Amino acid sequence: MKHFLDLANCTTAELQDLMELALRLKAEWRGGGNAAILHGKTLGMVFQKPSLRTRVSFEMGMKQLGGSAIMLGPNEIGLGVRESVPDVARVLSSYVHGIMARVYDHADVVTMARHSRVPVINGLSDDYHPCQALADMLTVREQFGALNGLKLAFVGDGNNVAASVALACAHFGMTFSIATPEGYEMKAHIREQAQAVAARNGTIIEMHTRPQLAVAAADVVYTDTWVSMGQEAEAGERASEFHAFQVNADLLRAAKPTAVVMHCLPAHRGDEITDEMMDGPRSRVFEQAENRMHLQKAILARLLA
Image (cartoon, rainbow, N blue to C red; front, side, top):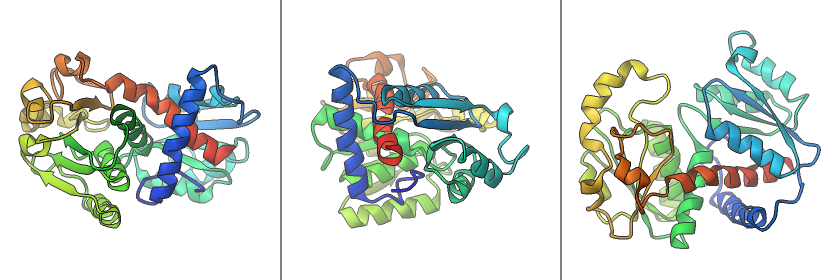
């Protein structure tokens, strides 16, 4: 694995290896600290979008493994505007040992990887959020002990998070059942990718327009914001289209009694999810947030160590 850009182009064995390594690194960290396997290594972090979890989890992950990180915000680079993406990749990769990029256009992170001397990690793009999805799988693994045979229901927008969670479920033997309003489905090429991975692993991808059908007998009920970054002008229209897709106590009754609730954050409480679900005993939202750091340490270890 040279880069980490999306889950469609990873093998199931590679992702299983990252999962096992993340579990070991997390246990090691809780047992007193991680070995400094990235001593002397620096991660360059390129941001086009604001960030809490991505920025802090990668920076702390590097520090805990003995390395360091440099944040480069949109005003410092002007990716694709002040400088071309290939030029940024060539220059930055001559300074650092790895690049993490949080961008709008997925093509930009692909182009960066093509022209970089060092590994490139997709910290988020408009098409995919692979680091989030693998951290989610780590959270589910810790909750249930295994992933194979579980059902995850995603309720809301067929966005980049839904795309990567679908691919992760397909790799790990989980049924992925999504409910979106008509017109807000996952992109066609991503559906095809997920179906192809699912076919190889004997897993199921279901698509619905009624949340109750998606959530029926689910082990995990997952949601995300209805309005992603760059879609702010659509907020009013989306609120109207998605009002029946809120994760609340009524919807959760359709899932298994042991089901847990997940959200990748930031959450718009009272819209896609209620306070009762976010803060209740079945919420695993903040465990997800912590696991971003541990899973990403596994990615950093494999690519940079």
